[in-house]
Structure formats: C-alpha cells, structure tokens
Length: 208
Image (cartoon, rainbow, N blue to C red; front, side, top):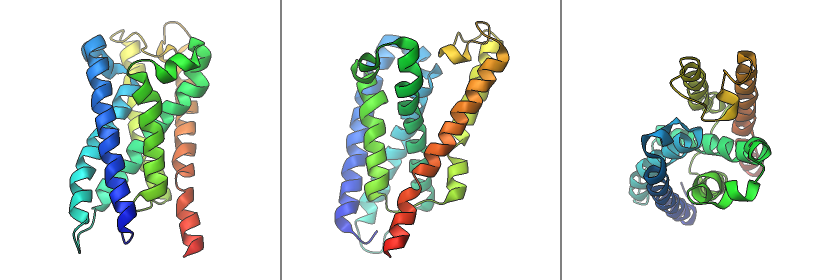
C-alpha cells in the first residue's frame, strides 16, 4: 500500500477492533460460557478478531520497505467484515423487531461492541484504508461462513441439540420451511452486503 498514512490507520483500526473484541468476549463468555458460541454474532466477531490479530502482524511488517500484506489476509478480513455487517443488519432490521428494544441490542454489555462498534469500525477500516480491494468472486467467498452457520444451526435445532438461539432457527416453533426461508433471505442479504462493500473498488478505479 503506497499511502503510508492509510496503512498506519489500518493498523490502528485493527488493534482497536481487536481490543474491543477481547473486552466483549470477556463479558459474554463470563455470562454465557460455551453457549455463547452458538450465536452468529459471537462467531462472526470471533472470525473478525482472529483475522485482525493475523493482520496486525502482517500490517506491521508491511510498514517496512518492499513488504506486502498477503492476499489471503486481505480476503479473510473482507469476509469477516461482511459477516459482522450481516450481524449489524440483522440486529437493526430483524432482531430489533422480534425483541422490541433496538437501543438495548445496540448498547447493552457486550452487544455494544459486537452489535455496534466492531461492525461499524470494520466497515470503516475496509472501505477507507484496506490495502487491497476485492472482486466479485470474493463476494461469493464471503457467503461461506453464513452458509456454514445456517446449515449447522438448522441441523442442530432439528436434532434438538440447540434451542435457537435465534427465533428463526427454532424449527419446532415454526414450519421447517420458514427456517429455510429465513436462511435464504439472510444469505441474500449477506450477498448484497458483500457486493455493496465492493463499491469502493469501482470508485477507486474511476479515479485512477
């Protein structure tokens, strides 16, 4: 990345998000224990944390001359940002309707970090100072974590090993087609998000 200032900003945002994620996991694991890892919210934020920790090392190295961040690290960060953006959108437009208290979902305890701060900061980091822009194929890769979660979540509910944890996964409280319908809708939203996060690519090319 030629712009050193943006690279430094990218490093700072990676560190800041990682700190917020660690705080959030300390709060949520203390309250829920291993059960917390049934939630897409926690899994998407864990994915983001892992990618950020990997990136910190690569970005710090890339500050030296002739050093670059590997493509796979940039791709994983894009994928993780897409998943946490799905978390934010589902909170805003699905869970807020089901729970009836958007402010609580956005600000209470670990949700302040996992539902609000980390997803928003990740979007800013990706759009403003990511060292590598992704392509349309990357948008398909970004669906993989959500597809895996949907398959595992519905299967675990069918086997009665999980109860939810989201209302739209509770196959015994609604027709199973409704759960699959929700999964398809959320996957559609996930793909739309992934494509929208590619828009800076076009803007960058139009300026070059």
